[in-house]
Amino acid sequence: MRTLAAACENDDGPIHIHVAEQQAEVRDCLAATGERPIAWLARHFPLDSRWHLVHATHADASDIDSLSATGAGVVVCPSTEADLGDGRFALEDWTVRQVPLSIGSDSHVCRNWPHELRLLEYGQRLALERRNVAADPRNAIPSTGEALLHQALVGGAGAAGIDSAHWGLRPGARADCLVLDPHAGGLLGIGPRHLVDAAIFACDAPPTAEVWVAGERRILNGLHTQHAQLRERFTEVMQELAGH
Image 1 (tube, rainbow, N blue to C red):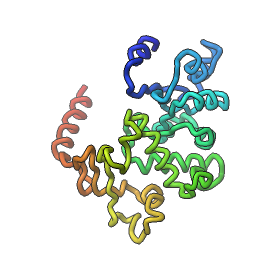
Image 2 (image 1 turned 135 degrees about the horizontal axis):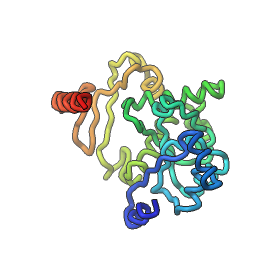
Image 3 (image 1 turned 60 degrees about the vertical axis):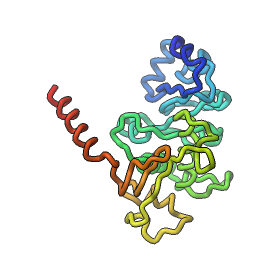
C-alpha cells in the first residue's frame, strides 16, 4: 500500500480503497492492529481529497470525524452492500459532517443509478423508521431525490477525478448530459419541481432517453449507439466463461 501511495504522489487522480465493508473485517483489523480499519488507514497514510473510501459501512463517530477533517470522500455501493448483507451505511452521520459521497456499483450486478439511490434511501427508512431521510432542508434541498442526486454528482466528480471547474452545466465543462424520457411511465404528468424525485422513486427502469459523454451521444432511446455489437461481444465472452 505504501508503494502504491508513493507512486501516486505526483498524480492528481483519485485513489480508491475498499475499507470497513463488513463487521468481520473490522474485528480482524482490531485483532491484528488494535485499530479499526479507517482509523488505521488515517494514521498511516496522508489522506486528502484524492482518497475515496469504498463502502466504509462500519465506521464509528471517531472514524467519521477523522475522515471529515481530511477532505477524503466515501463511495457507497447500496446494491452490493445489500446483496452481501454488509449492513446499513450511516448516511446521516456522514452527511452532517459534509463528507463527499458518491455512488458506485462495485459488483456491477446492478447498473441502474436511480435504483442505487432509491435503495440507499429505503435502507435508511427501514432501519430508522422515518421517511425522507436524505432530504436536507438546512441546505435548502427539501427534496429527497434532489438531495441524493446532488450528493452523488458532487462526490462523483471527485471520485471520477474530474475537476469541479469542469463539471456540470457551465461554460468550459465537459458536455456530459443525461436526457430524461418525458414519456416514461413514472414521469407522465410530473412537473419540473418533482421530476428528480419521480425519476428515482417512481420508475421501474431508468427513464433515460439520451446520454451524452464529452459531447458525443452514446445512448439514444435508452440503447447504446453500438448496442448490437456490444451485446453480441458480451454474449460471446459470457459463453466462453461459462464453458470454463
